[in-house]
Image (cartoon, rainbow, N blue to C red; front, side, top):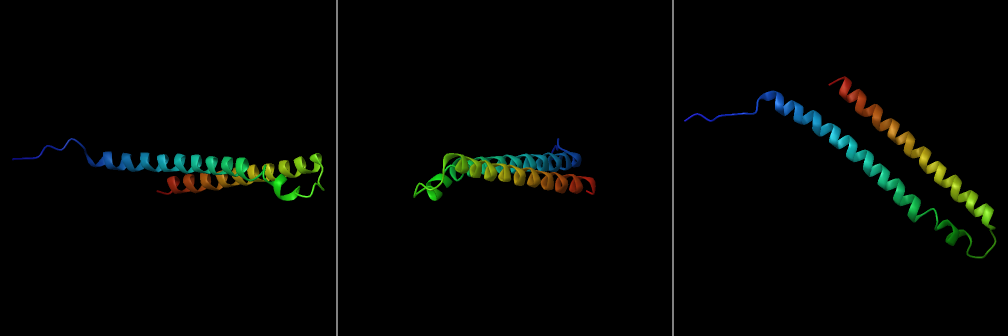
Length: 94
């Protein structure tokens, strides 16, 4: 008895291409969640660590938190750019 195969070889290649874009999108979302968790968990706690003695005023503390948040976002944008370049060059040469 012969086995009937409905899936040809091009299906496996298409699945691999789809799998790589799924991995790419998953990594991007993991980066987004990691940055959001850092911004939510650690940036507000700077006030607890640095203002324990009451020496810092609110404007200075808010400025420090804003600088850290902007720096993290810039690192996130840089990381997304590097990830995109890696993905595009890998797709281009494969």
